[in-house]
Image (tube, rainbow over all chains, first blue to last red; front, top):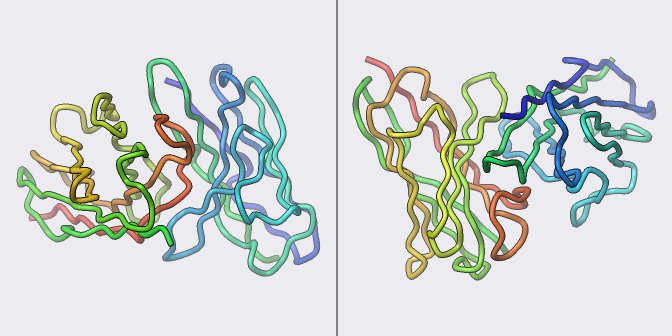
Length: 110
Length: 122
């Protein structure tokens, strides 16, 4: 089973700053089957990025994903007030078929 | 508009059973694989189970295998999760979620319900 480790656990930043979130896999993620989600308190997660770097429908271009193999990054170019939330990475398409999530990174207002 | 509405959560004693439902609308339910994901209070997301569009393929997390059963009724646009032999560690909000690609399985989840809380406690 692929284990995803996200870092840092918490990121304290101000609006307008750049956020860089890391997701490291215990083994190579095939075909860059890596997604990112945003979750705000009391809400369901929202899909941001799939295929490591493709934005989901309606996601602003300040969100970008990159990486391959075992190292992936979510970047928020300029934080807006609504971006303060918890972010999860997810791998899919593994063999045997499994879905795993990382432990999450909380982006909080400094 | 795509909508997923879970129901069936509640308080149950350890060893007990519960059946969750997810009513889907706004899309062709029979074309999409569906999933259950849970989140323990204050914790991260945990994938529970997935079922393909025609129910031909079903997968479970090791933590629930043998205790939980996923199923669907395409005629009723509904997804189910039968949970037996419940444990305290099964306490969580349970979300149903749709695969983002038609007729594929275990792809990213593009629509989620609001969740239903299951509490296992004596």
